[in-house]
Image 1 (cartoon, rainbow, N blue to C red):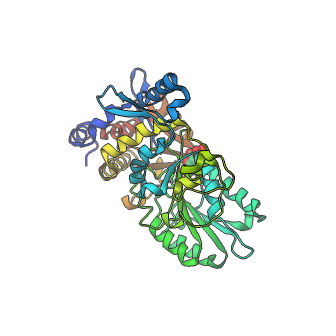
Image 2 (image 1 turned 90 degrees about the vertical axis):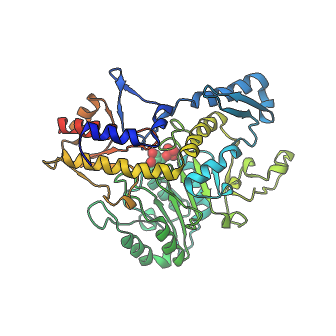
Length: 428
Ligand SMILES: Cc1ncc(COP(=O)(O)O)c(C=O)c1O
């Protein structure tokens, strides 16, 4: 590898996925494309996403309520014809694309609500504490919303969160070894109700070994789930084969579906016919007699059985546009490019960090990270971040002293990585 503009440009020329960059709207800085490395916070807008939403607005304008049951065809600017309308089974159109992203069967995924809402709905089913088994194990420093969810779930069942919620300690700096996770699970084995971990940690970017964690959890008799906010669309996932019980994720980061867009959930097929308790609503009710309006909840025997409300079609249309791009590119090609891009970014940063102005706290092992790198600064971190912003970099600041950056394989280039490191060298 070389830290030169020519080398980066050469890599971009050889990139099999290079045409995808042009399918996104890149933010500008002083009239020029910004160095956008913030797809781990808010993914960029696919250019044709508006057309997918407009298609549903047109159906609504033309047909009103009949749009729930009527198909319309629309040809997009790029020549693709999509079917719009028919909102009742709308999410079924992209269940296959979503399941391919998380390594699930189509029947195991459902797109609904927001991430924290889904986390609560799934914990309602999978956190069934008893007097003896009531503990929730999570990673060190989970995302605050997850912490609040765990605390409130413990309280809801009459437990003190200080006793019920166990954070796994780091084993070395900000790193948590898999063995440390297994040891913590075993240490609490007899009191454990559920393990729920962020598949990729939002702060340090560590990708955990979900297969091994799931196995270790199941040996104790507890359920195992993952918050995949930073993993879905970022790393290779095999939720079905890993035997994960449940998972949830948002769609506005790597899945590029827009701010606050509709989220996802996974329930392993082994639980579809179970009698786990759940929150129920009419959209989770058997589709054949949903409109008979009769009492007595009869859940759909798939992840869809966890739905409560009818679907937010405009948000779903955005999601559909975005996941179609994942299907086109393929997760294998995306994760292969992601590894190359991230390694190149890491290399460039090492070339400009002679004074040790920062430390990369994300694991250097490609098997233990996705595309996010977290740079830990000393007390000058905020100054550096502001200087980066003034120079056309869009990155992400996390208190107290971390800058998170993510070269996203769908739209970031090797030249973005080069430009970022060059600007870093000028401002540190
Ligand atoms: C790891 C993680 N969990 C939970 C959330 C909260 O998501 P939502 O606001 O969609 O509930 C986020 C948001 O960034 C997150 O990164």
